[in-house]
Image 1: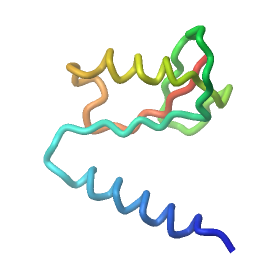
Image 2 (image 1 turned 90 degrees about the horizontal axis):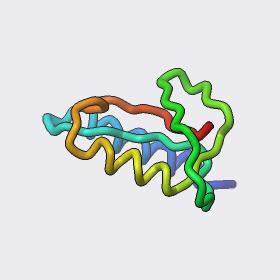
Image 3 (image 1 turned 90 degrees about the vertical axis):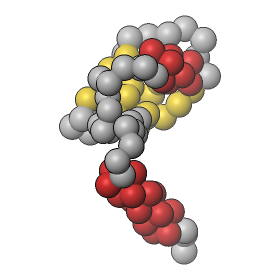
Image 4 (image 1 turned 60 degrees about the vertical axis):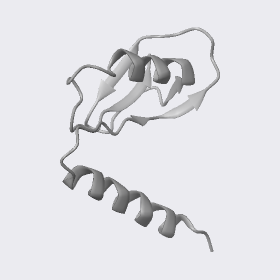
Length: 83
């Protein structure tokens, strides 16, 4: 038996609380992260159909830094991958 049900229940509960809050939030959903040094092109979708299913931690960090002071992804949950 695994703890995945408990983990996903907690994950869903925290997302529900964040979505119902009055704050500006972005829930980034990166695919499998890797340690690649070379940055590819960011692929953003909302339909859960990203290919390939990987991205570098550096590109994820760049996404957060580039969007820290924008409203582009306020109250959204983009899925992120690297082409």
